Length: 267
Image (cartoon, rainbow, N blue to C red; front, top):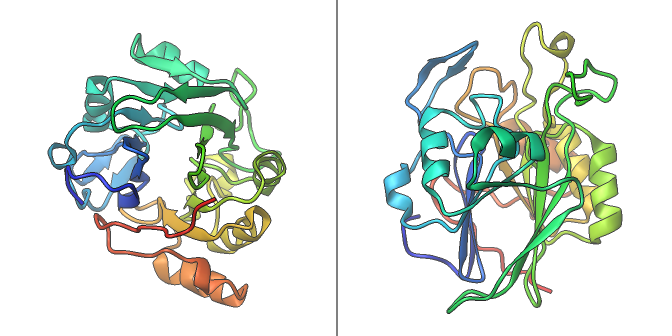
């Protein structure tokens, strides 16, 4: 992928970082562009397949949370702050400054039609960054405040971006409110960090991602957040096996990092 935009296209660049082209808009979720190496208590094992300079202009950066370097690192933060708009959770918006807008759960914003761009609605949806009974931070969130996003528009496919979520209950709530999801970008990887939440899942495992796909009735599932960091304990082969076991291999939209998945489904 490069600066040229798709009518609809999704490209996972590595780790959680994903580009979404939709109706003339270009979104990037959770930009991480630092080089491999130690990043705090986390180890990055590979850089992105495509660097920020190749992306051209970006209309909005979506940040599930700003407190972990595997979702927003130094270069990713610089990239986000250079974008015209950041959409994130309310706590992150306070920390990121004036270009960031915090959306509470289920809150939406309409991005107005402009030139070749159609109206797209961005909605913040629940995400639980760890086990439901896990340790909560000072504001009551498991691990930290985190959000997912749903992108919709008239005649457009409905796209769900999970962010760091481990909860099938949250996925069920999203399915109940949003109806069938056309494209689900699921942060998988079965992330585990020693000393955090007793080493339990912080994101979806492959098996739970397959279950989430069924709950969402997703037509296409694009896995992200399954490579590039040492604390991801499952990868693409695990995802393929889990979806095969569930009998839903046909919904997997797998492609090499930095290349487009172009879903054909639309409402």
